[in-house]
Length: 473
Image 1 (cartoon, rainbow, N blue to C red):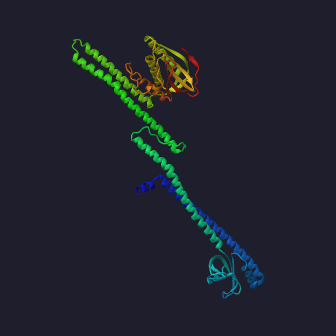
Image 2: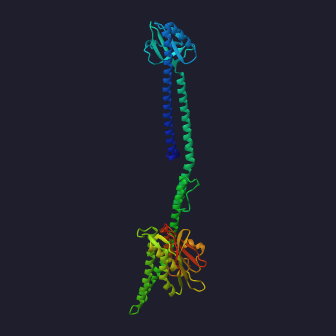
Image 3: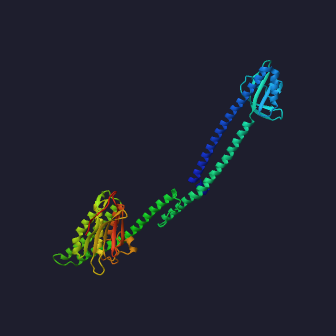
């Protein structure tokens, strides 16, 4: 009973019952209307036929009196058909006609009005229905002219039988609809529900089934699968962030604690130089932590589409020239080379500050990690080019690059491909660049620089914008 109750509460059953009820009601109304209209038309035709017969018999009566009328009625009565005739004398005795028995009350009302009566023919004792008119004649004679209703009743019987058959067809159609809905729709809904339960139980790799039909269930499943992929990526990203935060922040915090504890325990000099040195180092570690958390907050704001990121037209060629000019002296101080490569004045709609920060992060990464393995010198090129209708702001170095297997995770938060993690940094630079790219409906692409690494920030061009070569280092 529980399973039956659950089945009866399903939308499929409710829809099937609703469709069945609507079709049945509509069919019944239609057939009743057709039946009534047909009966009305047939009644009018019968009345017209009776009136035509009366007109012809009236002419016979006017020409030859009662004798001729009786002869005409007798002749017509012998012909096969549905027409009815009867002539009686003043005592109600039959003089001519094809009616054996009729109620005397019918003949008594000889006013010429159409009447529905029951009668018996000479051939058998069965009672029939008819529409008749009765008129009184001189000398107490009565004449009845009518037409049998068997054809009309037969037609109504055919309509009633058709209604019964149609109701059976409607019920079968309703059952077929329910079977289709239960086998296809409910099956897919149950599959979605089962998948959802497995996902809630912790299996984030599960996806809703898509059968490729392109119907509304496929569209819904595709959208939900995209959402699940995003949720899975965020959860795994959160796990990686948690692991890396525990590793990266635990080390400076431990150093700070040990340094302060050592300074308190071993500081014996009178001027407090040891304590001062410990505090300065502690401040540096605090600054590192603050920078790390500021970077995390900024990435979070950018990924959330922060309202303070106002969009304006930005000339990427000019932006690349400014960053190259700003970092060229710093590169020379470190013994590296930085130059502005061929650049196009491509205009995008974006936030200049965030795009500049993204380019700065790529440049600093290239100067830090893009050193040639033989010479130990970094050689960096900044440029802007157009590719496949998109603006590409790139930074290329001649270092060892990033293996193809590591490129996807390189932009995750706190991911540092340097196993020793001895170089300064928090592993958030590329994460911020990727967040800026997504905010601008673009993407960060890491590919082989042949040699080295080429980090490309691909952004959609502003409508109607095109680039011409202007800057060349």
